[in-house]
Image (cartoon, rainbow, N blue to C red; front, side):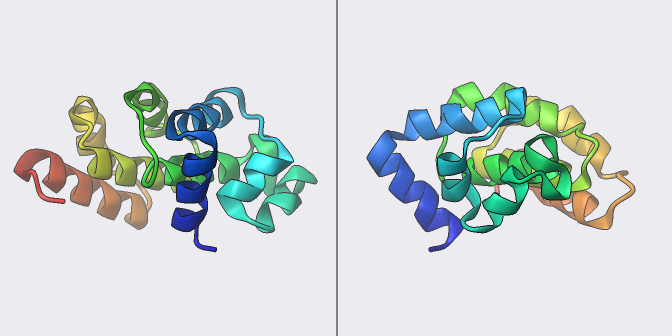
Length: 139
């Protein structure tokens, strides 16, 4: 099952708002239970829950939670996305920029503009795409 399929299935089963709320909680609280971790990342989530690769407070749960916002959305998630644009992890910043583009989060315009100077090429590229979407209205 792809991440999109998994998030869409969870949204049907649990409700889209509940999925979004769970993702916001992962970003804000840096906690993830095994069942929802599996929804977000499949079997790889087990390694994170066992403390590998940074564990539940590391970059992967935040990255996965942000990725879920590409497929499930509620405006209550916007503040969490904006915070992630300045995360220490480049993967989190990159995914947050992708969400900004997908969800047309105009309040992120200044932060996205600044990310065009990020040290990581993938973050810069995501920021450029997001900026184009915000300014020109492209998807």
